Image 1 (spheres, helix red, strand yellow):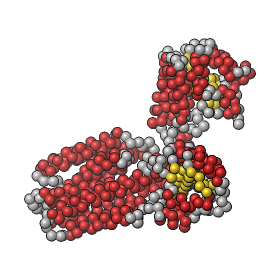
Image 2 (cartoon, rainbow over the protein chains, first blue to last red):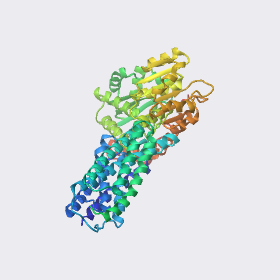
Image 3 (tube, each protein chain N blue to C red):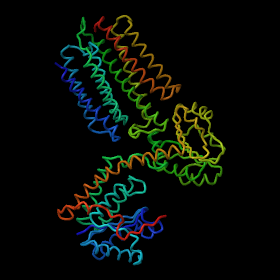
Image 4 (cartoon, helix red, strand yellow):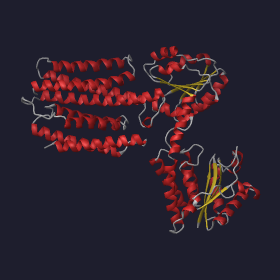
Length: 262
Length: 360
């Protein structure tokens, strides 16, 4: 019933994606109201979908991997809309549309939207834990996007081969700062997510252990960055790889959640 | 009514000739008034830049208008009758096309440069304020500005830096963003490094250190740029806080090696360093570019990027010309009272009437 909303939302991101690809290939990319409008429309439709789904379930819509992917996509767009303008990184939208489109298209295409075997009574701490943790993933995803942009720009500067996108990418110092801030935002949110997970009172299991490992990984990187032990290039690379690793861990979380429903 | 243009530019005359007819900014208003009140001239605008001096006018007939401008030139600049041939002359629709091309930067020394837009706007503003424009030139110039904006937004004719200095500035901005808090060092106050430093200065770089074997020369350049001179044997001490270094010494061997840079970068807390090596033989070891956080560009790489930008602009020429032609046809249709010109009338002559081209 609610899938049409999601399909419409995915279509909006596809439009943003196509516009970006076309404009970059033509060498005429500019931050444009079209791209921003496509993302904003997509976000409204995502929000409508999540509201409908949550209303139907009577709980936060994070009961299966399908919903996790959509919630993650929504988080990425939310953070982009909030943080993008503040950091003057309008081009982030050029990379955000493709990422969100791919997440949602995959979620729609794969057979992920199945009801869990068992469903326990809603627990606000668990819902808070799940929701905040996924928003943290959204921040890490956006950090990954900023990381890709940094690596692309840095590579062009180093090799002295400047493609048309070079003139549209923000300065690498701005990208490094944005990457760092997004990582810290994600880390802060993940800390809240973990603490609320512990507040549930259940014993440590390997899902929690996995989340703690992710938290430690990001924590160590942020500490190393603060001490200047690693440069912005390593941080950017880490953002991309760590997020990719985290996405692959979602499968494990899904498997476990089917055994231990929320 | 006809719209005409009589002028002289970098493409047709030496600078010595151009400067004879240049109108300083302080005199532009008065000169435009004088032209506007010349015989057979109904409306007038004077465009005077370092690369061209052009007189635009509206008059009943082109020949009368040209005579009026020539009379003005005789009175204002002492133009002799034998010298009339040095100017190119365009009447509509060629004058319309010429103005549109000028404002779009297609007639500039650096294809697609955008400074000319501001210069034409200023010239038109002066004439308009002095009351020497009316229906025809108002419409013509306003259309010209519209054409330039359209060409700029829909093509890549203004895209990318077109000189080594502007390449350096663009690269600096792509690394650091705002240049105002950045520290720049000029090592070796030669002409090339001076030009690059001036380009950075014009884009906001305020903190400039100049080091040269001759301290006096360093002090002179530093004073011009509002910076500070340091003795040549002290430059390494300042290196830790630098963001941009422009090197152009006459050292026979590299003065900055990879080993030196790696030591310095370790103490810079991962701040990037932009190194511009304009010297031949090079002052900075090429392997320095492999150090993380260091971006090294020599004169060849800067010029290659500039050439590539110009090539991209050249590829856009036919698109720009197509857009301009549509506007020329439209405007001339209006000027000629709804009569559409034939294709032959829209073609420029092989040489403008009476034009003699001087080569420098």
